[in-house]
Image 1 (spheres, helix red, strand yellow):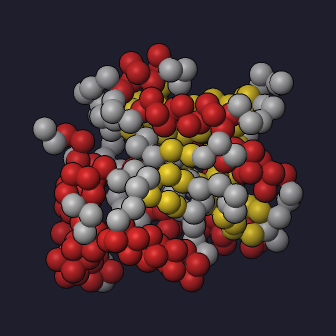
Image 2 (tube, rainbow, N blue to C red):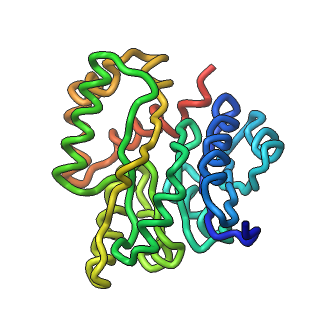
Length: 248
């Protein structure tokens, strides 16, 4: 087995001491299925808990970023990466065991510029099934699979990394990567045998109807954001994502 790092897994984390170890363990399980070196980089974003300590104790490399933009946090990790291949995953989520192996196989085929992965919740209920179905339909119609992102580091560099947006950066980044791939005669793909295990912690905390309620409650803010005024929408993103783990 080669010890040279070929794959860098980027994990953005803001006060994720409850989840960082299980995320790293999922990466380790996937790394055990390939014959190349795999590093895990946890990007600690304004962490005031034991995230960094636990990450290092479990074999991850830790870098820091103090911004309030998930795209910037991910790009900091990509910049620090030693691997030729980049995979990103959020800290409260997990990857399935064959993820890294399938990513390498798809990239080595020469057909794919990069891609995403199907998303499956770690538990299900009726409203979570509705969320799941909406995601599947959206991904199938657009082809812009997100969740786990994967591509060569040179591809991320070519498209300017993750799009500099506070929210929706995943969709824009997928569009940019797909457009770049078309120039090279390659496709933006999706894993077929593996998936992202999506955390339900926000649903556990605020109810399984959370996102469906938010869509109706904040329809005005979403429409304004689509028209260029992102003030209300960015405030909502702060509450749901950037400040969520600061709640006591």
